[in-house]
Image (tube, rainbow, N blue to C red; front, top):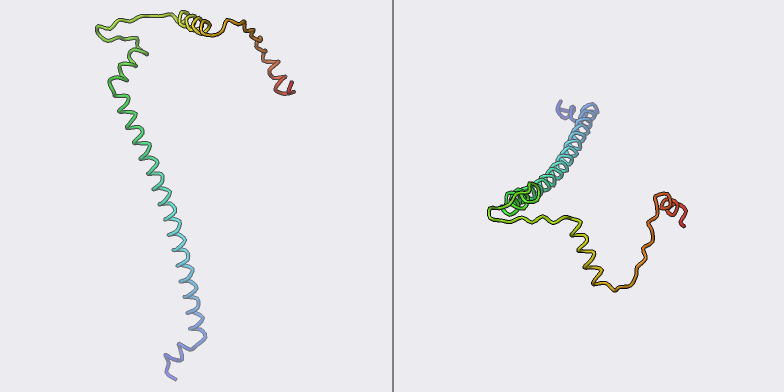
Length: 133
């Protein structure tokens, strides 16, 4: 029997061949699992990129809105009490507005007397909440 056939047919060679196949299988499984993990990470990063792009677009729209001349004028009027040149400003006290609103709603509503129930204090509200009375 030639020495190569004897070597290939020996139990020691088959044992080492089996070990090499097992080791190769383990390496392939580890590589496939690592590839799966990387694919999962890539897909999560792509979804995060999409979310960030959407947020970027929203912020760009807000910037355009905030740089709009009409917005700037309204904010200057509301927050800084400024006015345009040639514009007249009229100050109306809030009490007069609320009184006018209440008078207009009272005149449109029927003249029947409406009795309002006095508001419960906090202790009574808690008592009703806890004991259901």
